[in-house]
Length: 118
Image (cartoon, rainbow, N blue to C red):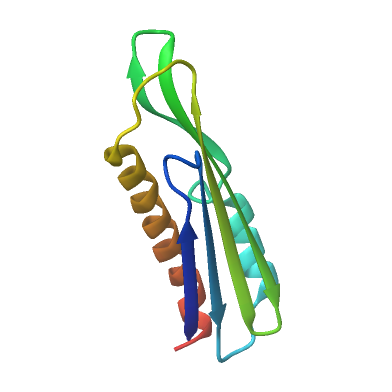
C-alpha cells in the first residue's frame, strides 16, 4: 500500500490539518469501511478539554474527520481546532497532544485498510 501523509498547522494557527492518502492494491469494500468509520467511537467528531484551570479557564480542541474512496485511492482528512475560553498560555504539550492523536487515528485507519492491501 502506497501512502502519503501531510500534517500542517500549529499552535499559532489555532488549527491543524491532516490529509492521509492511500493507494491500495485491491478493491475496497466501501460499505464496510463506511459503516466502521461512521459507527466508530474512534473517528467521531468530538471536542476535548486539554487544559482546565478552574471553571472558566480552559482550552478545548475540536476534531472533525472524514474519508473518501475513489477506486483504489482512499483519503482521510482530519481537522483540529483549538478554542480557548480565556487566556491560558498554549504550550508545546498542547501541540504534542494533537500530533499524538493524529498518529493514533492514522494507525487505526491503516488497520482498517490492511485487509484490503498488502
